[in-house]
Length: 144
Image 1 (tube, helix red, strand yellow):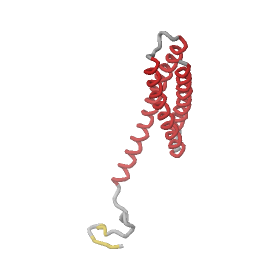
Image 2: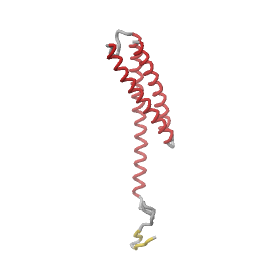
Image 3: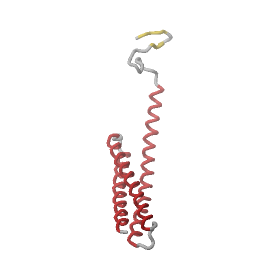
């Protein structure tokens, strides 16, 4: 039971770290211009924390199975208290992550709109290979 308590404490600690990272991500997503390098760093940290949480959840399931416990641990008040905190924290993190997703979608829509405007402009004098292109200006064929 002590191992399970320690594991739940580690899970709470990791969820707290994830809350900090999500708050930092929100600040970056609200900034203008978007700090893409910093956002990538935060995203990498978030992914590492999510992987840690996944691993801790697998360990928790194994410990529960071996000790014949099952969350929310009604017979173990100290474990039940930890589990309730984990559930509350997870709910808050889900809401915060959904909000960050909306902010990110806003940036993606803005970038998509900007790209569509750029693609509507006439082609440049140079092609993608860097060589000059042949264009018809005023009905005449010219080569630059």
